[in-house]
Image 1 (cartoon, rainbow over the protein chains, first blue to last red):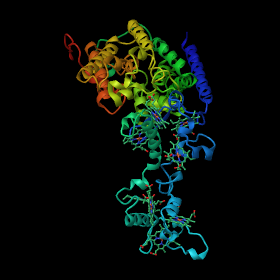
Image 2 (spheres, rainbow over the protein chains, first blue to last red; image 1 turned 30 degrees about the vertical axis):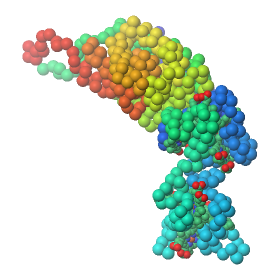
Image 3 (tube, rainbow over the protein chains, first blue to last red; image 1 turned 90 degrees about the vertical axis):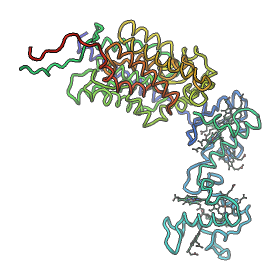
Image 4 (tube, rainbow over the protein chains, first blue to last red; image 1 turned 180 degrees about the horizontal axis):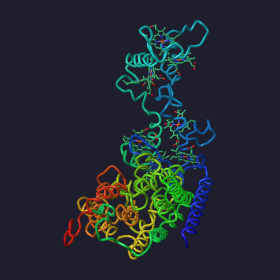
Length: 210
Length: 322
């Protein structure tokens, strides 16, 4: 074969490869809504490889054992846990649904009054309280603390007074990805401990190894 | 006085297998086919997509570099296609298209063309590209993450990760036959041990790759893994496992033996290969990285010029003013 001919063949091969490659990529199925085979979690510990298929098929667990009722009701589907149990959020990523500050629990179950926190609010006025960031800006001044400081002073001040909840010693209980990791830890290891099968809470390496 | 520098030729011996550059590349490509087909059967269309895109884009980069450097178009020599193919074989079956294209760009341009094209590169282009991607986007080259949507009839975790976390016990569920027959996760063309071995033997028998390098590479892995295994059989997997998992085989036969980044003298070839094998096992058993083959190959590439100085003394001496 002459060099010229060889080169022509090479062009054709390159072209065919590119076309086949593009077709294969275009034909890839979108698997995001399907029941996963495995779920891989990157984590600050070692990563976790959760075998969804063997849990639901081989270990014969019901979907509702894990995709608990609230999750089921709100989305009508097996939504991703992380869509509710988030780690990142602009507010305190520690508490409550969606990982936000658990307003309801604080205002209704801990026996606090609105003005304990909404310090400028007059319940008599007939209006409703405002968000703190309506007045407290990103950066504060001598007269008025900035947003983060005002949260820290108020939240932690009260916790310290009552000896409850997170304080300056445990920043992570408010800031850490606690809720998200807890959702997994509580459910995964809770079931394992009840079933006496699979890695339990202390057996970190049983899950965090991938 | 004539300008003696005009023809600087490296030291003998030279190795010529009687064929042209392109014949050699084609034979190496042919030798990968068993492993490639096994990978395609296991992973299907996504793997075909990765391999095709890898080969095609490597050829395109080569072509563009030919144009940019105003050299004759060299994509017909098969080297770019081979680079693309080997790179694709190391990737997980599900790899984003842009990772593939960036990989071949690095391999062909940074790995090869900036040194003047074929024969000039001090490092294996495929290993350079893979290492850079491993550092830049580790998550896309993580087999556990990439293959989550495949259902296998064998443990789905990458064996080297299991060995790293749980020691020899982590891979109890596998047998050596599993590894040999490709019943393990990994790169598209890197898991079917038997296919790689057959391809390697073919290439060695025909003289397309140097047996000294491949065999000493594997011997290096075997002996060092054996030492670790004897020292603590619980923590360190047996030598057979190390030989048949990760990139050991594809590294020994197809990467370490790459011409321009490896030595040509007998003793240096043995040292080069053995060192690569030993480093592989050291990185796997002692280092933070899961597989050691890619870094081991880059390191031996690096010291190749030094070890290739070990050579028989020439008889006679050079006369300058005869």
